[in-house]
Image 1: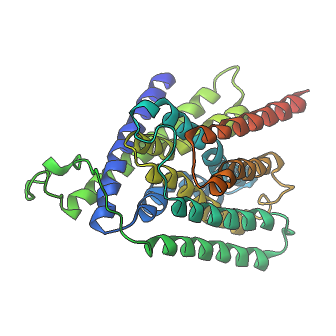
Image 2: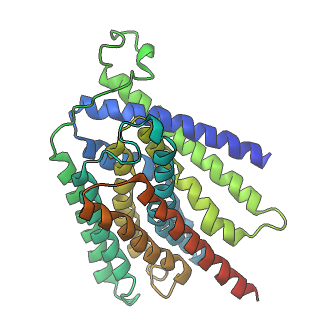
Image 3: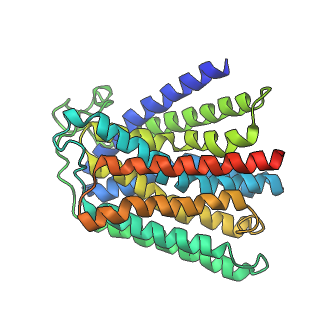
Length: 347
């Protein structure tokens, strides 16, 4: 039964991602926004909010040390999964679809958008991880860091909103357009109201599907012979990052590479700034380099994977989909670290 729920919930997330990518493009078009604002801000925030609720509820409303540990693990797991597995899946999608893409395995990117995102991610996440080395009793410095992280994210968003509007070529018909009886049908543009309805419905599908997916994983973890820690560290985070990953694959299929990458890198900035500020303020005893060693090890791998992908891209002024596959290698490194740690702990 749990396996059936797993498959069904994945289908719901996939359907929601299809509606969301289509709807958010039209939403950005109606508001005359650039690709950076659409992919790195609107899409990134929309799909990052569901997994942000996990640490928020666990830390702020859960109470207790165990709940805080789960919350901090979720906060650190999000940028890690985006920098490793999401990058890998996006690169694999580019390579598999190279025959139908005009640029083959090369991503047709706005380097400014991705560079802007990764610069702010490095700054925000670096500050947040650095704060983990502050003594727990330093309450006010930690709060100041949290405020600084929110300000950094605000500046990141403002930078994208200041960019010129995109031309939005190749917009597909809005999926819900036919439901709007008061508007002329395609190829006439849909009204903002029906666009907003589609985006909300899509987010509901994504959130509901992700919730059911996580519940199915939790039930499987409760079964005999299943290592719950292993599932919590390696499998459950995949469910929370499915929306961003699927969105990016769908945009790669449509040849909209800036939106595909911006959805991932923009979500990394959001996850590196906003949830980390929650951990800093509400879980100071766990947001410590010595308080959650295995989880914080993922932060180091996140930086390494990001640097291995982005630095060559900036030097060459191009990004090949095969370069994104390195994210999978860094994910395997973390899998090995977790397995060795768990095996050593059981020995």
